[in-house]
Image (cartoon, rainbow, N blue to C red; front, side):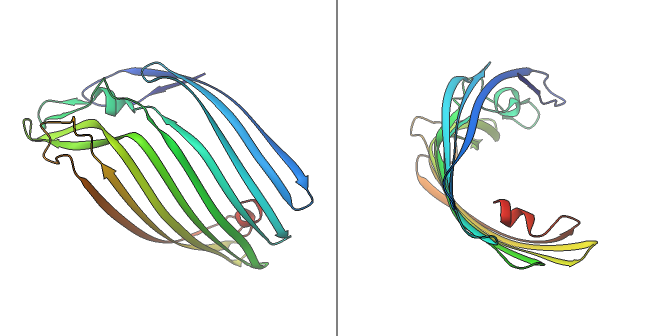
Length: 220
C-alpha cells in the first residue's frame, strides 16, 4: 500500500495508490531467460488498471548480452496535475484528468570490453494515450494541465563506463529523444490548437562515481 503526498504552498491534498504485482524469471535455455510480470493498481483518483510486462535476455558470453523489453503503462496524474491552483500566475491543475495509458518497448546491447570498461546502447519507443501536458491558456495567460490525444516518444542512449582505479569510475552517456504530441481537438482556450507538433531533446552527460563500471552491463 503506497500513499503519496506532494506539498505545495497553494494546496494540500493526498492521493493513495494500492499496487499488487507478481514477477518471475524463467531460464529456458543455457543462454536465454524470460522475465514476465503483472501488476494491479488501484488509484484513489485515476481508478484501477492491470498491466503486464515482459523481457527477453540473450547472453552471448560472460561479458555481453542483448535484451528486448515490453510493457504496458498506467500512469496516474500527479497531485500537481490534479490540484495545482496558482491564482496569481494563472496556473491550474485539473481534477478530471485521465491517467496515461499505453505501451513501451526497448532493445539494447551491453558488453564489457575488458575488466575496466563497459559499453551499452539502447533504443526505446513509447506510445501513450491521454498523455498529460501543461498547455498555455489564453484566458488566464498561464498554464493548465490537460490530456493530449496521443504522445509518441522515440530515442536512444549510448553509455560508456570506465574504471580508472579502485576509487574512481568515469561514465559518459549521450541520449537523444524525440517526442510527438497529437493534441485533442476537444481542448479549447489553449494557444496551441489541435495540431501535431514535435520536440527533440539531446543530452550528453559525463560524470564520475565510485560504482563498479561493469556491473550494470553484466546485469542489464
